[in-house]
Image (cartoon, rainbow, N blue to C red; front, top):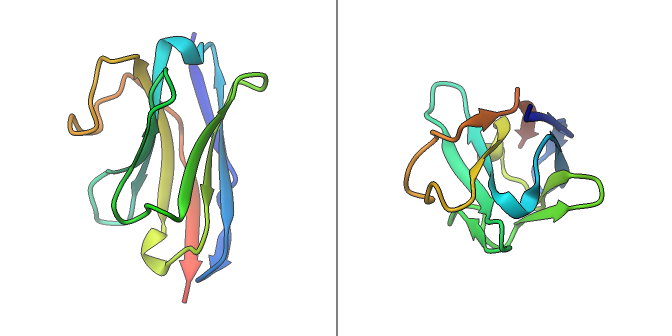
Length: 124
């Protein structure tokens, strides 16, 4: 059974950094693509970043150059390093997964498995 658990959310000031973690039990990273979404209050889900099973990383334009997605195969954990945070990054952040190559970055938030989310609050 696949189970995703996010952690690392916190309240920080604008310009600060956070690293989100997603512990991915029951997942073999060679077989899946991994995603980070966020949802701000009253807004739709937004794809922040993804990484394919062969290591190709995607970033939303709003976070390029400031966020980095990575995997630790030994710990079976997905990370999102977020630097130079802005208040508009305030949201619940979710990791998600689906079969490798099954979805593209334009398919929307329809991945098969999601975590419960972790909250990020960036104050100005």
